[in-house]
Image 1 (cartoon, rainbow over the protein chains, first blue to last red):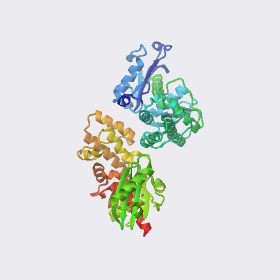
Image 2: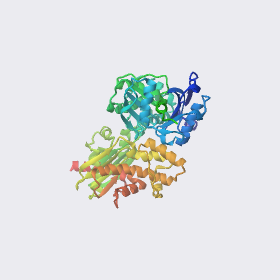
Image 3: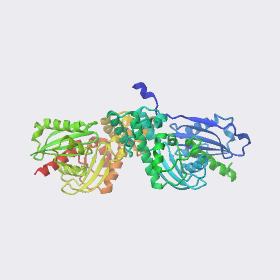
Image 4: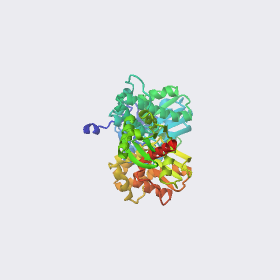
Amino acid sequence: MAEEKKQEFWRWTESNWANPDVDWKRARFITVGIDVGSVSSQAVIMADGEIYAYGNMRTGSDSPNSARNALSFALEKTDMKEGRIDYCIGTGYGRVNVPFANRSITEIACHARGANFIYGPEVRTVLDVGGQDIKAIQCDEKGKVTNFLMNDKCAAGTGRGMEVFADLLGVPVTEVGDRSFQVDKEPDAVSSTCVVYAKSEATGLLRKGWSINDVLAAYCRAMAERIYSLLERIGVTPAFAMTGGMAKNKGVVNRLVPMVGLEAAKTMWDTQIAGAAGAALFGHALCLRGKGK
Amino acid sequence: MITAGIDCGAKNTKTVIMKNGKIIGKGKVLTGFDQNQAILESFESACRSAVISGDQVETICGTGSGKDSVKKAIPRTRELVNDLKAMGKAAHYFFPGARTVADVGAEEGRAAKLDEMGNTLDFAVNEKCAAGAGAFIEAMSRALDTELNDLGPMALQSDTEIPMNAQCAIFAESEVVGLIHAKTKKEDISKAIHDAMAGRIVSMIRSIGVNEDVVMIGGVAHNPGFVAAMKKQLGIEAIHIPGEPDYGMAVGAAVAAGELAS
């Protein structure tokens, strides 16, 4: 048991990537977006408004280091030096703590802009489910925010809430989605209002003989219900796209989609980089207008 | 005349036996996952402490979040008493001057404004979020790796004010871990925890008005750190607390049973 405790079930896969086909040396502007979230941090490097490289990792205990680490992680995959960067924009919860950023922009604006880029200009509703908040954003064809709603006070429905459950049930967070569908019958949701109460409810269900997969299904449903309650308030206009880490969790997404009644847009990109990509695009636009350095 | 009040709560189930308006027996067991069993056990234990047999109890009333199970476990239960009614009766029983009562239990927090008979005039309830209930302090005691019962006295040893940013218990746990890493004294963290939790109950009380005497019942009233923070934030000299505040709701139900029987 003590050994089991040491395993960190919440730990999702960190990643970095670079596109070998992009010739950054010939690019006019290299811009960087750094999204320092409460749980994860991303750096996206763009060459003339195209994604060249990115790094996605867990946020440490202090934001300035997390920003630096994410950028170094992205640069690791490239032969570029930091000095080549023309403009850098910080965003996210820790955006004021990106010491090398030229400026900062709110994550609402960046997520809308980033979703417009990675999913295409037809996106009108962006749902970003991050580590410690949920944002429902409406935007126009340029990715400009027209309206938004946010919950950042409560863990219900957030990535942190999912991590707590992965730890409680001893299931790696990356397996939660698949396992939540390995049930004979879809159970009713547990409490969708409070993670603490959902936890005590889940412990009770396990003692009653529910399987771990049943409890995961009941929790994923509760998360989807909670997230949908925010979307419902702002209304969903197609196309509908999800960003943030939760977009990778099938257990929640596949239960949320029927509630919304619209398919979620697909992308080849890592959904966690949307905010940083949006920031890098804002940087690119500023450079084009001659406002870079 | 002998009556019983059974309060089936989220964490504990409590029974109080009353004879002609005087408490003669009490019993408390962990609710666990079998409410029926907890109800029967607490009732039996209360009867033993009153040195009577269960049959001698004429009228039984149930209350608390698990009140429906009281009727199932003991079918002759006369009535299920609304939580707000039970807390009003309890406050009035212990302190007839009570005009405001707060009941803070494991998973619920409530505040009510009372008339001179203990009837509810207005109320505010939180049963959806752990941030305004005992579960918050419990979660924090785990994060601080401190016994729940030691946490309140520990808070009294600090006069440093550290604001907690997080409202949610889950986020507050991370914040507490952050404070530990920053080498903040445990006493100061403990005070911050109680101040934050008291703030939420106080804003609930303010929404219905602060009218003295203020009475507090429920298990969290045992916690001196919490009570001190409440007094300070309400700006009042005294909060009246019965000897065993966790039995408050059960007393209220037993009083209601007495009124039904007479």
